[in-house]
Length: 114
Length: 113
Image 1 (cartoon, one colour):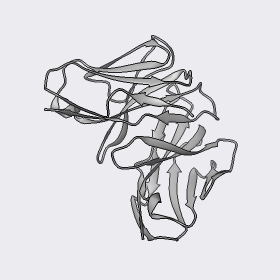
Image 2: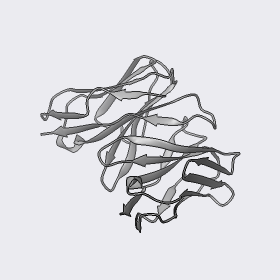
Image 3: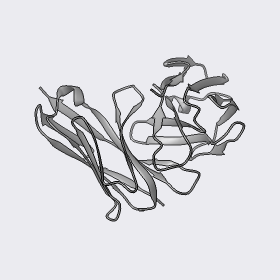
């Protein structure tokens, strides 16, 4: 079974703190993704990466950065957390771009910024 | 621009009923379509993937169909159970933009005992 794990299920941070969210997948997938999910807004793509050290902006990259130093690990960084970044953060991974590759999600991190 | 719509937004049924969830998309240039389940406060669980060349996929009590020409997919759940209560999302994998999944807003299903 594909496993996508996220470092924390719940996280509480203060405004202005630097926050790291870690994601690890064990299936040697090329592609990794970070989403946030908010009521009424659905899933929105923040950043994705199709290879080590490669990254692409998604739909809402402002206020975030990412790092992919190893194939299995994709980190989301909030340089200076703000209250409007309180959200559920979901990491996902997928094999190469083809019709038969499923996308798998981690359990999510509920981040609260006070 | 690809848009994915799910109708209805919410559905409540008594236990044992067969039900159909609908998903429509505007651009038929897709690699595949996935159905996911999400329980409150949890991540997404992949239920079924239908490749663009396929018409349907089955897993247990679930059957998903795909009609690319009309831009529609349905998820059929047979003999519903209270444990099926969750939000169901469909998503299409599109050709451009590096292979993004475009999600619908989901259907919140409640199965009453």
